[in-house]
Image (cartoon, rainbow, N blue to C red; front, top):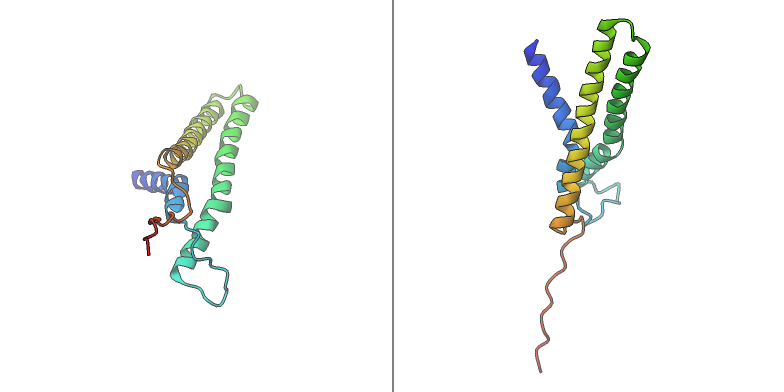
Length: 132
């Protein structure tokens, strides 16, 4: 039973940290527009776009729905102590998951702003022109 808890925690952390990992992999050069010319890089970009788009949005929605489910259990089953405890449990775990997701998002934004990180390639150095 404890092993299942560790697996669930690992998968939850993996899903929550997916934006951090996928932002590190994303690049814009060269474009992967040609459907006949798919490389490993294009495959990785397709997977990261899938993770950072609909999958992360789905995880946010599920966590928020779990939190709201806990609130509903707590309010609707006020007389039943067991249902109230279950509602409190959902609210606590949902709140912790929301906090962790927002924290990771904030840390990525802080690193991006602090170290001037972007998905654009660096500018090549410019050298002074030599006299003829």
